[in-house]
Image (cartoon, rainbow, N blue to C red; front, side):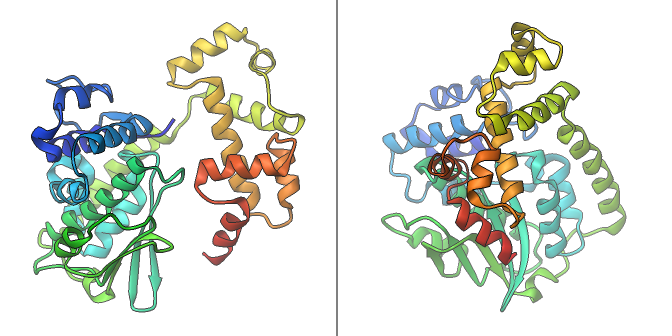
Length: 334
């Protein structure tokens, strides 16, 4: 069950303006009209994408991601925003995002990758590239530059911005705001910076404050990444059972010493269902096995509970947005 910070929902609804019913849109992701904007409160990523698609039915969303991302302020990101601001260079600021982004989303990972001509700040987001995800990706790339401009002592523009999905009907607003070429239909979602720009000192960089904040963030990260023992045990049991086909909840519950009803209730307390936990376990197991080239795709399909390789391929493409073979090839390039 993926999540994103509710801050994103508040921002995109505000950017949409009077063309949408703000209260109804926020209610669709579980936010009441009088709920404050809080980066620490999470909403379902799927419901967030649904909301973006409902907005697209009401207004022209061509430049909505630009307006949304541009409105992001570091002071709204809590301790992570302060740590970004206190980092001594822009490159160090982005390294904080790479490490601590899990504090505001479970569906996006970031990577700093040196390449010819500079360094890419890459956004990795798995799943079907539906409209809601495409809009979210564009807004995320814009926000990554918006917060960088808040710590940079001189005007900042990337070398190039890359976007995996096809271009909207116009990219004029995107290129005007970024101040550089924006290439849609690329292999990555990323921002290319020169190394000189990333080495530039931040306006408020302070090593002492930075160390204090990162220790606080490490503690927060440790808290959210620590799974309850029941969930950890259930994942292990599901993974072990997958080679015999799709596991049944009653059998997994019995192995954990629980009734099916108690098992269902306790998973619900952690915001999980047996189906979602099985799906996540299958996906995690598949991704891990694909990194080990000793296993063929047919073996991995069997070990993750699929009777046919074609069914595994369809499921993996739904999870990650690419085929198992392409995913394995991309992993070997890193």
